[in-house]
Image (cartoon, rainbow, N blue to C red; front, side, top):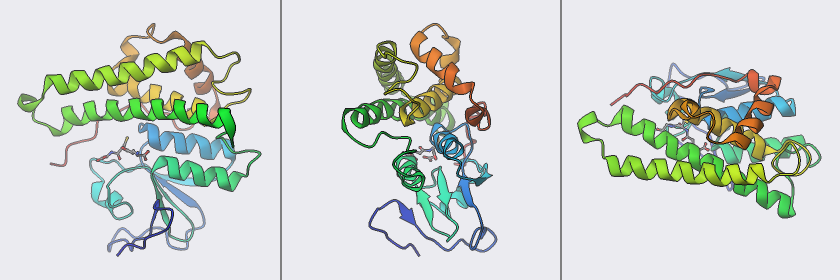
Length: 240
Ligand SMILES: N[C@@H](CCC(=O)N[C@@H](CS)C(=O)NCC(=O)O)C(=O)O
């Protein structure tokens, strides 16, 4: 049974026998592998904000049923709270984390042009990651003889379009970070997306292609909060 919530981002479901793990748990639990840019941006944000968590590196391939017990979509990240509530959808989880941290420390600028710019850059980054993930799903979940090249070409064009705009915006910035004079969620989400695309669609094979983005990613990846959740991409195993 699922309890609906006004925010639409929370689901509380009793876990099937054998996978109950977190009621009255003392710490938040982040479910999902760090090679997912969506899981990773949550993990990096929690570390930057000093919010402790335990990690369950469940795979959307082999652990699909365990994940579905907390998110009917079978997607990660899921953040299990101490009271058993499961938060889903990385943007909604980040919103919750910023609320916990308070306006001064929140990773997304709170208003105005800075907020709109950050949200725009984050949408490009997560959109590119989603289009990259769809290319992976084509390889993993569809028989090779049924792959449809025009669809894959469209996905590649969409990734390249998003990264080209991100590169332009990154090259045009005046300081070390994408928005304002401190690291924001835009830097985190962009870096996590690039790291994912490096492995998922072999973007790493073209290191010269997005130079300004590469500089930004290098700055982020040098931080311990990024290093603590770095994992080379591995395609999920097909469960079909
Ligand atoms: N919009 C979602 C995307 C999450 C997402 O697509 N996660 C991937 C892992 S990178 C997943 O769970 N894929 C499994 C599936 O969709 O079947 C979010 O931001 O949380």
